[in-house]
Length: 536
Image 1 (cartoon, helix red, strand yellow):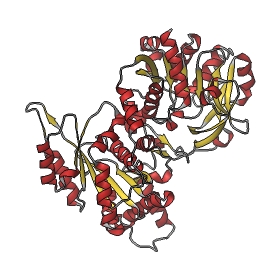
Image 2: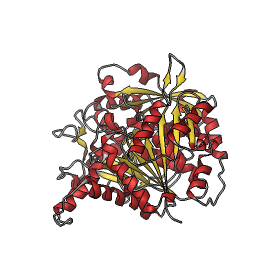
Image 3: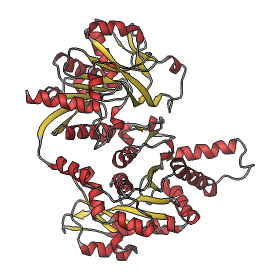
Image 4: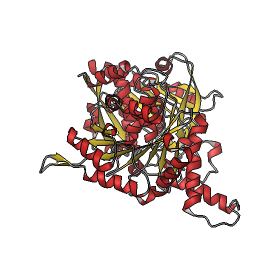
């Protein structure tokens, strides 16, 4: 089958749900037996999201092969239930770096390097990789930003060219726009959508479908108006009203006939009938009233909740499996250092300390770990959250008052967390950590082994510092169990407190492998312990 391309563009405003819509559309097509892959094109000039501030970019999502990518790839993987690779996300910075590198090597024989054709050709080459690497029937491709942004123009021009090269019958443009609501007149407005489509058409692209996002129901007359003024089939004007349940989006698109329309217009052959029963049951269970529990998420980027997107979704997946409703209490770790926010921590039934970099707020996280250990509160530490749990234990159980990580204090006399030997000479900050999928051997009789129910697992990493092996024996003698170890026995992957209902830290990021229908075992273990504590 010839590869088909679905190109998602955004209009009017950003953060309109383009990534979720693309992911949900991928699930619709996969449910019909088609092989789907996904790709995100990011217009910023950074080489990757790995060194970008979480306040600006949100979460850095890590793939099996170690690629540091945009958080939308988390949506793709969670909805479609696929495993993506580094070909699935690239930036303007990567494209220009490649072209400039080629020019420096003389690959262009001294020719003048221009946006067209050199930059656009490199963009098209990278898009082609997604199809070749996976053998997918359909490539779901999302262009970051909104139409009209100067940064995204080379991407859109490349897509225009690609449409002619692979054949118009193999390309379908879906434009996701926002319908603003005017409170004074109590009506939705289509004019911004019209202007957005006009901007898209001015560069030679006419959308084949418009997803009209709104906080209010979209009347039939508005669909007629959008179809008329934007030159789109009325069947292809799809209202998408905001839903409180993220995972309801595929059901709404299915009800709107999106998949049937795509199959018809692209000449696709469905090989299976979709069975939405399990997915519909999941959504109904989300909506059903349940016992409420509180989990304090103690982080340093809590002002932007997207910085912990996968952690938040993993909590929801696990809560659904345990038939509880989790109320996440967002606690800034720096506030804890000032004596603020402790009312939220003390009222919580469990604590999560997620990953992060830099010293700001780390003492607050250490205090949260101390509170969880001393008061037997269920605790899950992710990456840095595990390291700080180990630092707290060294200070207050082993008696090493200045115990620390050399990331925060190079002069500490007890570097219980230290750089790996092969990291000490690295100066470049981008893509130089232990990144991607690594194996972990679980130790029998531990809470981690009980949670997983397996002897060996593979998890995604993103870190430089490790537990210092020089202290492992002291830790174990004092009541800390290293329940997950690398196959060669050299690296600690999971730590837990022996005499505690559930206090586990993982050096890896389990949140990247949690799925709505298949929650991650460590999150399930936490929520189960939280539920038991709340009942008592």
